[in-house]
Amino acid sequence: MTAIAFIGATGMLGQPVARKFIQAGYQVRIIARNPRQAKKLFPDTEVVTGDLRDPTSLLSALKGMDTVYLNLSIQQTEKPTDFHTEADGLVHLLAAARQAGVGRIAYLSSLIMRYQGTNGFRWWVFDVKQEAVRLIKAAGIPSSIFYPSCFMESLLKTQRVGPLVLLVGQSSVRPWYVAAHDYGQQVARALRLAKDGQNQEYVIQGPEAVTQHEAALRLVAAYSSKTLRVLTMPPFLMRLGRPFSAQANYGWHITEALNQYPESFEAAQTWAELGRPETTIERFANQYSPSIDR
Image (tube, rainbow, N blue to C red):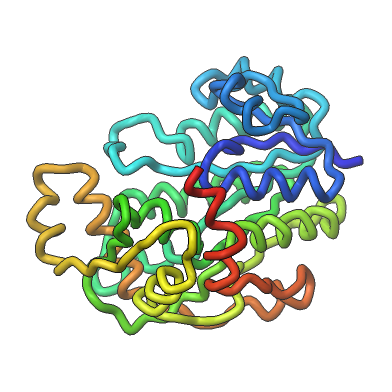
Protein backbone atom coordinates (compact mmCIF):
# COMPACT_ATOMS: atom_id res chain seq x y z
CA MET A 1 0.00 0.00 0.00
CA THR A 2 1.44 3.37 -1.05
CA ALA A 3 1.87 5.78 1.86
CA ILE A 4 1.07 9.41 0.99
CA ALA A 5 1.77 12.40 3.20
CA PHE A 6 -0.66 15.24 2.47
CA ILE A 7 0.11 18.90 3.14
CA GLY A 8 -2.87 21.25 2.75
CA ALA A 9 -5.70 18.78 3.35
CA THR A 10 -8.02 21.11 5.27
CA GLY A 11 -8.63 23.69 2.54
CA MET A 12 -11.23 24.06 -0.20
CA LEU A 13 -9.32 21.90 -2.65
CA GLY A 14 -7.42 19.79 -0.16
CA GLN A 15 -10.41 18.11 1.46
CA PRO A 16 -11.95 16.48 -1.63
CA VAL A 17 -8.55 15.36 -2.91
CA ALA A 18 -7.56 13.83 0.43
CA ARG A 19 -10.87 11.97 0.55
CA LYS A 20 -10.24 10.60 -2.94
CA PHE A 21 -6.83 9.32 -1.83
CA ILE A 22 -8.42 7.59 1.15
CA GLN A 23 -11.18 6.07 -0.99
CA ALA A 24 -8.56 4.84 -3.48
CA GLY A 25 -6.94 2.79 -0.74
CA TYR A 26 -3.81 4.84 -0.11
CA GLN A 27 -2.33 5.02 3.38
CA VAL A 28 -2.78 8.74 4.01
CA ARG A 29 -0.98 10.77 6.66
CA ILE A 30 -2.16 14.36 6.97
CA ILE A 31 0.49 16.88 8.00
CA ALA A 32 -1.09 19.96 9.57
CA ARG A 33 -0.14 22.97 11.66
CA ASN A 34 -3.44 22.53 13.48
CA PRO A 35 -3.84 18.77 13.94
CA ARG A 36 -7.00 19.17 16.04
CA GLN A 37 -8.82 20.88 13.17
CA ALA A 38 -7.56 18.30 10.68
CA LYS A 39 -8.65 15.43 12.91
CA LYS A 40 -12.19 16.82 13.04
CA LEU A 41 -12.33 16.70 9.24
CA PHE A 42 -10.59 13.31 8.96
CA PRO A 43 -11.34 11.41 12.19
CA ASP A 44 -10.28 8.02 10.80
CA THR A 45 -7.05 9.21 9.17
CA GLU A 46 -3.59 9.61 10.68
CA VAL A 47 -2.83 13.25 11.45
CA VAL A 48 0.57 14.53 12.57
CA THR A 49 1.92 17.97 13.39
CA GLY A 50 4.10 19.64 10.79
CA ASP A 51 4.87 23.20 9.72
CA LEU A 52 6.57 24.34 6.53
CA ARG A 53 8.36 26.98 8.61
CA ASP A 54 9.92 24.26 10.76
CA PRO A 55 12.17 21.82 8.83
CA THR A 56 12.61 19.59 11.88
CA SER A 57 8.87 18.99 12.15
CA LEU A 58 8.71 18.11 8.44
CA LEU A 59 11.46 15.51 8.69
CA SER A 60 9.64 13.73 11.49
CA ALA A 61 6.29 13.91 9.70
CA LEU A 62 7.67 12.51 6.42
CA LYS A 63 9.43 9.47 7.87
CA GLY A 64 8.18 6.28 6.21
CA MET A 65 6.23 8.05 3.45
CA ASP A 66 6.49 7.03 -0.22
CA THR A 67 4.95 10.23 -1.65
CA VAL A 68 4.16 13.72 -0.42
CA TYR A 69 1.28 15.61 -2.03
CA LEU A 70 1.42 19.41 -1.83
CA ASN A 71 -1.69 21.59 -1.93
CA LEU A 72 -0.10 24.98 -1.27
CA SER A 73 -1.35 28.48 -1.95
CA ILE A 74 -0.52 32.17 -1.61
CA GLN A 75 -3.03 34.05 0.51
CA GLN A 76 -4.55 37.28 -0.77
CA THR A 77 -3.02 39.27 2.09
CA GLU A 78 0.57 38.09 1.52
CA LYS A 79 3.28 40.48 0.40
CA PRO A 80 6.28 39.68 -1.80
CA THR A 81 8.64 39.88 1.20
CA ASP A 82 6.56 37.51 3.40
CA PHE A 83 7.21 33.83 4.04
CA HIS A 84 5.54 31.85 1.23
CA THR A 85 4.67 28.17 1.49
CA GLU A 86 5.34 27.69 -2.25
CA ALA A 87 8.79 29.29 -1.98
CA ASP A 88 10.50 29.24 1.42
CA GLY A 89 8.27 26.44 2.70
CA LEU A 90 8.86 24.36 -0.42
CA VAL A 91 12.64 24.63 0.02
CA HIS A 92 12.25 23.28 3.56
CA LEU A 93 9.91 20.51 2.37
CA LEU A 94 12.20 19.32 -0.44
CA ALA A 95 15.21 19.17 1.88
CA ALA A 96 13.22 17.18 4.45
CA ALA A 97 11.82 14.87 1.74
CA ARG A 98 15.32 14.03 0.49
CA GLN A 99 16.52 13.35 4.01
CA ALA A 100 13.45 11.22 4.85
CA GLY A 101 13.79 9.17 1.67
CA VAL A 102 10.46 10.22 0.12
CA GLY A 103 10.19 8.72 -3.36
CA ARG A 104 7.87 11.20 -5.09
CA ILE A 105 6.68 14.81 -4.89
CA ALA A 106 3.14 15.46 -6.16
CA TYR A 107 2.20 19.11 -6.58
CA LEU A 108 -0.91 21.10 -7.43
CA SER A 109 0.28 23.86 -9.77
CA SER A 110 -1.71 26.15 -12.07
CA LEU A 111 -2.54 26.43 -15.76
CA ILE A 112 -3.30 30.14 -15.69
CA MET A 113 0.20 31.06 -14.47
CA ARG A 114 1.24 30.68 -18.11
CA TYR A 115 -0.27 34.12 -18.67
CA GLN A 116 2.83 35.60 -17.06
CA GLY A 117 4.63 37.85 -19.56
CA THR A 118 1.67 38.10 -21.94
CA ASN A 119 0.41 41.60 -22.81
CA GLY A 120 3.03 43.05 -20.45
CA PHE A 121 1.48 41.21 -17.46
CA ARG A 122 3.86 40.55 -14.58
CA TRP A 123 2.86 39.38 -11.09
CA TRP A 124 5.11 38.19 -8.32
CA VAL A 125 2.62 35.45 -7.35
CA PHE A 126 3.07 33.78 -10.74
CA ASP A 127 6.84 34.14 -10.37
CA VAL A 128 6.59 32.16 -7.13
CA LYS A 129 4.46 29.46 -8.76
CA GLN A 130 6.78 29.09 -11.73
CA GLU A 131 9.80 28.94 -9.43
CA ALA A 132 8.06 26.22 -7.39
CA VAL A 133 7.83 24.02 -10.48
CA ARG A 134 11.51 24.66 -11.23
CA LEU A 135 12.52 23.76 -7.66
CA ILE A 136 10.56 20.52 -7.71
CA LYS A 137 11.99 19.46 -11.07
CA ALA A 138 15.52 20.24 -9.87
CA ALA A 139 15.13 18.47 -6.53
CA GLY A 140 16.34 15.08 -7.70
CA ILE A 141 13.11 13.39 -6.59
CA PRO A 142 10.62 11.99 -9.14
CA SER A 143 7.62 14.29 -9.42
CA SER A 144 3.98 14.40 -10.49
CA ILE A 145 2.90 17.96 -11.34
CA PHE A 146 -0.71 18.87 -12.14
CA TYR A 147 -1.79 22.03 -14.00
CA PRO A 148 -5.54 22.53 -13.51
CA SER A 149 -7.93 24.95 -15.17
CA CYS A 150 -10.44 26.89 -13.04
CA PHE A 151 -12.06 24.98 -10.20
CA MET A 152 -15.84 25.04 -9.88
CA GLU A 153 -15.38 25.45 -6.12
CA SER A 154 -13.97 28.94 -6.64
CA LEU A 155 -17.39 30.17 -7.74
CA LEU A 156 -18.80 29.31 -4.32
CA LYS A 157 -15.80 30.24 -2.21
CA THR A 158 -13.31 32.80 -3.46
CA GLN A 159 -15.82 34.60 -5.71
CA ARG A 160 -18.76 34.52 -3.33
CA VAL A 161 -19.92 37.11 -0.82
CA GLY A 162 -23.07 35.99 0.97
CA PRO A 163 -25.78 35.39 -1.63
CA LEU A 164 -23.68 36.92 -4.44
CA VAL A 165 -21.29 35.29 -6.88
CA LEU A 166 -19.00 38.16 -7.88
CA LEU A 167 -17.47 38.51 -11.32
CA VAL A 168 -15.25 41.33 -12.54
CA GLY A 169 -15.87 42.52 -16.08
CA GLN A 170 -16.94 40.47 -19.07
CA SER A 171 -14.67 37.99 -20.80
CA SER A 172 -15.06 35.78 -23.85
CA VAL A 173 -12.36 33.40 -22.55
CA ARG A 174 -13.73 29.87 -22.04
CA PRO A 175 -11.94 27.92 -19.28
CA TRP A 176 -12.54 24.20 -18.86
CA TYR A 177 -13.98 24.32 -15.32
CA VAL A 178 -13.20 21.20 -13.28
CA ALA A 179 -14.59 19.95 -9.95
CA ALA A 180 -12.04 19.17 -7.23
CA HIS A 181 -13.76 15.80 -6.85
CA ASP A 182 -12.81 14.87 -10.43
CA TYR A 183 -9.35 16.36 -10.08
CA GLY A 184 -8.69 14.27 -6.97
CA GLN A 185 -9.78 11.13 -8.76
CA GLN A 186 -7.40 11.83 -11.63
CA VAL A 187 -4.50 12.54 -9.26
CA ALA A 188 -5.17 9.30 -7.36
CA ARG A 189 -5.04 7.39 -10.66
CA ALA A 190 -1.88 9.18 -11.80
CA LEU A 191 -0.02 8.22 -8.65
CA ARG A 192 -1.19 4.64 -9.07
CA LEU A 193 0.24 4.60 -12.62
CA ALA A 194 3.54 6.31 -11.78
CA LYS A 195 6.58 4.10 -12.24
CA ASP A 196 9.71 4.31 -10.12
CA GLY A 197 11.88 7.17 -11.30
CA GLN A 198 9.23 8.50 -13.71
CA ASN A 199 8.25 12.17 -13.83
CA GLN A 200 4.64 13.02 -14.67
CA GLU A 201 2.98 16.24 -15.87
CA TYR A 202 -0.75 16.54 -16.55
CA VAL A 203 -3.00 19.37 -17.69
CA ILE A 204 -6.31 19.03 -15.81
CA GLN A 205 -9.44 20.31 -17.54
CA GLY A 206 -13.15 19.69 -16.97
CA PRO A 207 -15.73 18.26 -19.39
CA GLU A 208 -16.56 21.49 -21.27
CA ALA A 209 -15.36 25.01 -21.98
CA VAL A 210 -17.61 27.84 -20.79
CA THR A 211 -17.12 31.53 -20.05
CA GLN A 212 -17.01 32.63 -16.43
CA HIS A 213 -20.44 34.25 -16.78
CA GLU A 214 -21.94 31.12 -18.32
CA ALA A 215 -20.47 29.01 -15.53
CA ALA A 216 -21.74 31.33 -12.79
CA LEU A 217 -25.23 31.67 -14.26
CA ARG A 218 -25.58 27.92 -14.73
CA LEU A 219 -24.38 27.23 -11.20
CA VAL A 220 -26.79 29.78 -9.69
CA ALA A 221 -29.70 28.38 -11.71
CA ALA A 222 -29.00 24.82 -10.55
CA TYR A 223 -28.07 25.61 -6.95
CA SER A 224 -30.83 24.43 -4.63
CA SER A 225 -29.36 24.96 -1.14
CA LYS A 226 -29.74 28.74 -1.17
CA THR A 227 -30.84 31.51 -3.48
CA LEU A 228 -27.82 33.02 -5.19
CA ARG A 229 -27.37 35.59 -7.91
CA VAL A 230 -24.51 36.78 -10.07
CA LEU A 231 -23.17 40.32 -9.67
CA THR A 232 -20.74 41.74 -12.23
CA MET A 233 -18.42 44.54 -11.08
CA PRO A 234 -16.73 46.96 -13.47
CA PRO A 235 -12.95 46.33 -13.44
CA PHE A 236 -12.05 49.94 -12.63
CA LEU A 237 -13.53 49.61 -9.11
CA MET A 238 -11.05 46.89 -8.19
CA ARG A 239 -8.25 48.78 -9.92
CA LEU A 240 -8.97 51.86 -7.78
CA GLY A 241 -8.58 49.80 -4.61
CA ARG A 242 -5.20 48.30 -5.51
CA PRO A 243 -3.01 50.91 -3.72
CA PHE A 244 -5.03 50.59 -0.51
CA SER A 245 -5.79 46.87 -0.20
CA ALA A 246 -3.62 43.79 -0.70
CA GLN A 247 -6.79 41.80 -1.36
CA ALA A 248 -7.92 44.23 -4.06
CA ASN A 249 -4.47 44.11 -5.65
CA TYR A 250 -4.53 40.30 -5.61
CA GLY A 251 -8.07 40.27 -6.98
CA TRP A 252 -7.19 42.63 -9.82
CA HIS A 253 -4.20 40.53 -10.91
CA ILE A 254 -5.93 37.16 -10.78
CA THR A 255 -8.98 38.58 -12.56
CA GLU A 256 -6.82 40.08 -15.30
CA ALA A 257 -5.18 36.69 -15.88
CA LEU A 258 -8.48 34.79 -15.75
CA ASN A 259 -10.15 37.20 -18.16
CA GLN A 260 -7.28 37.21 -20.65
CA TYR A 261 -5.57 33.80 -20.65
CA PRO A 262 -6.60 32.13 -23.95
CA GLU A 263 -7.11 28.63 -22.64
CA SER A 264 -7.30 25.83 -25.21
CA PHE A 265 -7.98 22.14 -24.77
CA GLU A 266 -4.82 20.26 -23.75
CA ALA A 267 -6.15 17.39 -21.64
CA ALA A 268 -6.45 14.65 -24.28
CA GLN A 269 -3.52 12.70 -22.83
CA THR A 270 -4.83 13.24 -19.29
CA TRP A 271 -8.26 11.89 -20.21
CA ALA A 272 -6.76 8.91 -22.04
CA GLU A 273 -4.58 7.93 -19.07
CA LEU A 274 -6.60 9.10 -16.06
CA GLY A 275 -10.22 9.13 -17.27
CA ARG A 276 -12.50 11.88 -18.47
CA PRO A 277 -14.04 14.11 -15.77
CA GLU A 278 -17.81 13.72 -15.64
CA THR A 279 -18.94 16.46 -13.25
CA THR A 280 -20.91 19.18 -15.03
CA ILE A 281 -21.60 22.53 -13.43
CA GLU A 282 -25.20 21.46 -12.76
CA ARG A 283 -24.12 18.21 -11.11
CA PHE A 284 -21.59 20.09 -9.02
CA ALA A 285 -24.26 22.56 -7.88
CA ASN A 286 -26.57 19.76 -6.75
CA GLN A 287 -24.23 17.01 -5.59
CA TYR A 288 -21.07 18.59 -4.20
CA SER A 289 -21.75 22.22 -3.36
CA PRO A 290 -23.98 21.65 -0.27
CA SER A 291 -20.90 20.48 1.67
CA ILE A 292 -19.18 23.79 0.85
CA ASP A 293 -21.95 25.70 2.62
CA ARG A 294 -21.50 23.85 5.90
